[in-house]
Length: 459
Image (tube, rainbow, N blue to C red; front, side, top):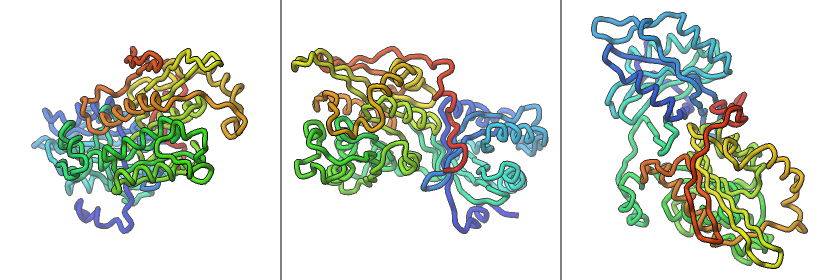
């Protein structure tokens, strides 16, 4: 028999699993497994899945608690077993959804929870066969404590991976890892920011990854500010070279970059000049290229700064499938053709798994997408003779700054998550930024219908 330490040490080439759970599901999990009034409790998360560059990622879709009347206990109240019929129901449901099964229980207020010897033996006896019945899908056992979690996963009957982290995806995002982060400020360069938003913020930012899609107007402002704020890992996504027409709205780009420097390279240069310690990853491709999707899976959240509704549609659906918070910004400027500014309407939208998505609100619709297909056929943005949309760098900067504030709240919780799941409208002509009534989740939304599905097979 293996104890927990022996099991972890037996993984010759350890892979890792990240488990993402929407806060609504995680609240239900905690209510059940942290109720010790009648002894230990447990249940199964049914999870979608995908494979990133660093390991496997599971996306909780459903929670199946072990029914109280089916649990058998010893005299001390510890859980011993439950009927095989319940396991069969879990396996049937996971198989129906092409999903994984993850057993969750609690060790109370432990700050370093680990699978005990009995936990490990029970998990081995359960998941050796279950992982064969659900082939190719990581299934395993996770124990949670006080803000921490650990676990082991099986594939094909063998233990192959440890839990890297359990992400509670809400506002703010919480990362329950096997070992707590050191939450003391160590970087003098962001000392004044840390004093403003708390000593925990330094370590939380250093441990976070944000992907920015679109690096011209708003995206360049976003990259600049995230570098100033001490973000640990920034993924820049854009496939184009710097063009002369972009110098009026792209911070960090120079005349010497025209037609010679990729936007990603210009942003990397900018970010590293601000913070040499930042990891800036250049993805010189366009979403939804495979390399872009793979990179986004490793992000904690995505900021989309694109000028296409069709691109927003695809990014929104991807984030929905993978429990990724999404911050979208955009600006639409109209003139009378003679240089008079008629309107400058912008928006900031923050989407988390439990909130309405972009498709639920007024921004995206079948009619809007079809109109864009007619007006902007494929390759439109690569046509040097196409007239681009009007833009003003300072207005892009306003939207970008507020988007970064939203990202900062999602990571550090400096506003207690108040900036999560919200819509703002910006009037650049009049100078107003107004928080709007949040739309409801739309029945039949095609993006929400795929929430937590991940990929049909590993990428």
